Image 1 (tube, rainbow, N blue to C red):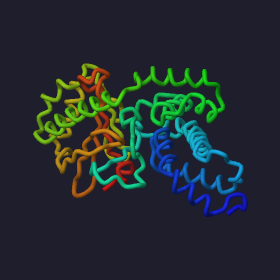
Image 2 (cartoon, rainbow, N blue to C red; image 1 turned 90 degrees about the vertical axis):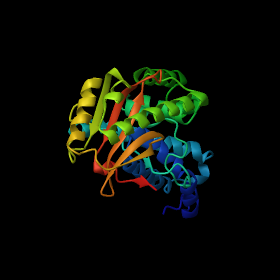
Image 3 (cartoon, rainbow, N blue to C red; image 1 turned 90 degrees about the horizontal axis):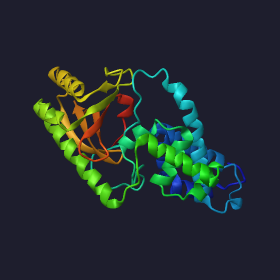
Length: 300
């Protein structure tokens, strides 16, 4: 440990800010392991800094984790060029809605899994500004200082990100409506899986709905997006007919929103996440994660 920052001071900062920094990194990177590594890197660096010259530790640490995540995001496209099929963020799956542990990674998540997927279409700076602004509520002056950009540039980055993901800030009442809408869709999808009859669920999908499946090259999955509600239903009917959807189906929260988890022989096999359209009237995307490396962290 460097003499610049004492072990006790760094450990206290770690306890105070690790959940916040991990949540920021996860929202930007879409990977729990990468987020944890980024946090560790930040505190290794912090141990070599003179802490007495840091006036606002929280702002300093948020800037550090943001820049660390930006560096990792710039390398991600090259790493995913060889990824077998669509790459989806690693879901954080909670089996219970009560008893929030103090160290829970996404204590008060506001984005939700579907939005994490859409954020992958944004450039690293757009993603960083969006997360800091929309998810964490920082004003543009603070964001500009963290990213060493002008406020005008940060406003433009946020606008571009919002346009790409067709997102607008929502009030608490709208968040409740979103939650209720997704819950309705999840219930219908669960009934379709249990019964093996997907026709009723067909009418909840938009005509141009898309399904992305991430098996990571480990589990068989669709290597290309499945487009159109008839093809999506045909896919689920097909794998259902082969027994792939047999197992214990649990309704869970996945990275902040309702979803489904299918267990087989005590192990998670599939995580299903549904994305509603802007009017909350239909489902415009279905995300299916079966990569076992992305289903290994289940919160009890």
